[in-house]
Length: 418
Image 1 (cartoon, rainbow, N blue to C red):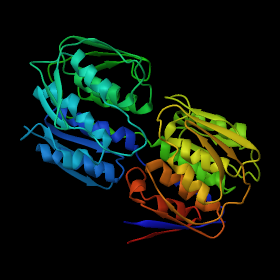
Image 2 (cartoon, helix red, strand yellow; image 1 turned 135 degrees about the vertical axis):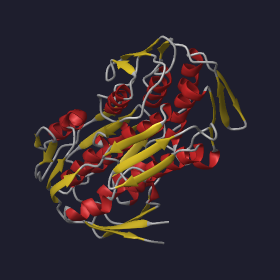
Image 3 (tube, rainbow, N blue to C red; image 1 turned 90 degrees about the vertical axis):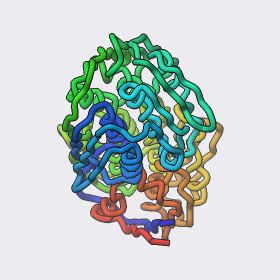
Image 4 (cartoon, rainbow, N blue to C red; image 1 turned 180 degrees about the horizontal axis):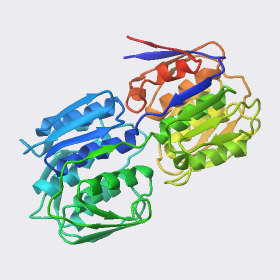
């Protein structure tokens, strides 16, 4: 299992480019199942999760090729409609094959998914949505079994916004008969990116990015070409890396409008942020204030930046209160930050962070999930001495060449093979 060592005390500076979005590209990959032919996706990051998604498609009978950021997927008549446990257990987003398989092939057998252990994240809303579209759904021996003569348009009201659930319903409804209305839909930028691709394929999706999405089902879709949006979470993580070291870092090729909530909190904390059409810069700041954040669905502060922002707050003047409302178990990084001498008191879904202003000390720590690993690396950038982050495979699920990008900005970071 690889690990990373980080030498603290180096101020970051320079320009770095954001990669394509992990959270956007995965539903795009599964959406290709809706139409035969060659699909071409550009700006695709080389990530473990992307590789797992491609393996899943190949197990169904597709062919995939990722070269220099361009992913080509050839979809042809499938040899099976079963997404096996061996692949699905590695990545929660695998549940997104359910909608396309039911919509186009009228049957599906999908293993219950795995992924980061940051909460229960039940798929009940996915299954209830498929039932509302007329599918027969059962769960047997760890698999979701679905079948239908043809999905029928329906009104779907989510009791709470769900990104994956919204994406699954959009894909399924694109080939359903008549019209589907999704209310209380997720508003994340990745939802809009999926809608844009579906429409390029010939779907009729309206309202993506708002709480009400309308999909008029069509008889068939066609393969298309698309460029994946930039990764807002990676961009935010890189900005926070510059901020925590007191440096000046510009993230290019991003979508600043997707990071408005982070911009607001960094400004409130005392940082100056410059925003251009496709770039954001965090400027040098010697001292910053502790601020409170509460994670919620987009456009509020993203749960995927909570751990990284907590690392920043360990160096703030004063106290900050961080409230996690999205996942019930997303404070596992707290005990590892405490190993680095952070002063944090967790209370179920609330963590009180008392700024230590330069008192972090390097130590061996364990990455517990994807965003926690990024948080520990950020803390290591300012901790005295050397920090060793173990189980770094989590990082590779969602960050493309993170050590190379940080090294280019001036960090002293090294990946060690074990």
